[in-house]
Length: 177
View: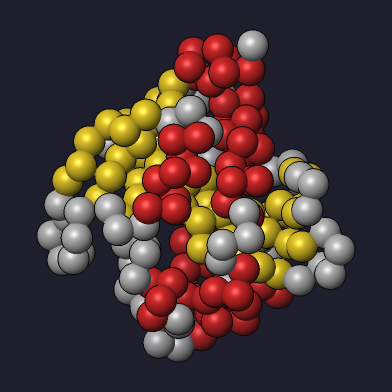
């Protein structure tokens, strides 16, 4: 995994030193409300998640990036690029941030770099993003980045609908021209 730099952030490989920060994020009910995962009740939950991330990294199925503020060096969140389990020519991503960093444009700034990584480093044909229907801000970021709404669906056990967005490699290349 290469280090990715944006104007304000550095994306680097997640490491064991990040477990405490990730636990703080994933034990926040407001964060979990926008994710398709269970709240972390103990640091062991987060350690297990890291074990999964690192095992799947070895297989080329998951690429976990820590999001670091360039100026302060603060850990602010994670963006995970992962193989879509239903489509082998597609990677999707999940982002979760410390609540105090919501609404300052982190997602919109790093998303183009993550999409570039998926198409040019992983060499996937498609990139997909899933958003809770109520998360209007994230939907707007995807749409501004060239993603097209694919479908809206229910997931058993999750309250509310999920929106699937997709951008193909051809659409991405056209956007660059």
